[in-house]
Amino acid sequence: MKSASRQPATGKLRQAGALAGELATDQQGATTLEWALLLGGVGIPMYFAIQLMMNLLMSYYGMMTTLNALPLP
Image (cartoon, rainbow, N blue to C red; front, side):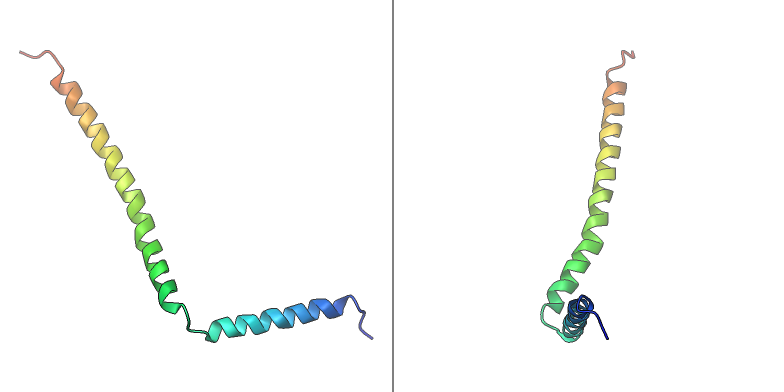
């Protein structure tokens, strides 16, 4: 005989399994998800690459202004 405390947990597992099955076969919003993944896969690395390039550019600019300020004849 099963205890009464295990019945609700089993029901919730079945309900979660049914919901997962519906989500696996549901095609609504698939295009939006694909675009979001594509944007995340391209946009996030691009953000860090631009940050790196900006830091390099700022350090180069700082070096050039220092060299131009030297009192050379």
